[in-house]
Length: 207
Image (tube, rainbow, N blue to C red):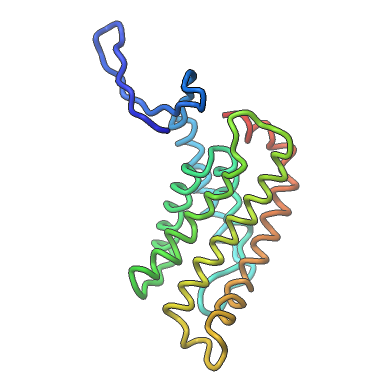
């Protein structure tokens, strides 16, 4: 649980800071700190850069990039679901600014804010102390996170772009269309994370 603490300092000043209380309630571990914020900024910049490298561009939106989701996924794996969702949502907003496609407020939320924010689910592997199967849990979290993004885009497609399906079932069309670029993105993400996991392991676990 996050609580705001006000503590007295010897020079009669007050310091406000956010801390996370662990399950035992005895130890307090600072989460929202300068390191988290600076890494978030770097991951955002890297994600934007990777997204500019397009391998495939789908005709009606969506693309296969050079692993643009990887920085967001790694950030969530390191810092947890909450920070991951926040960073992903910010990235979604930036993606809308750089590549705007607005049809309806709900479509905007589903295709940008929710779709990218849900990548924070990759943080399900987060633990205060790294345990066994951390890598495997991180890969599972990555699959669930990108699957969540797929569902968000599919829902947007069914609600707002069903006419593109023609005589085909809108659900089937939306699933196939969005999977055509997100499955390759998933494969790229898993391969790259697997390749860099060992050299980046200390950085990921060093909070």
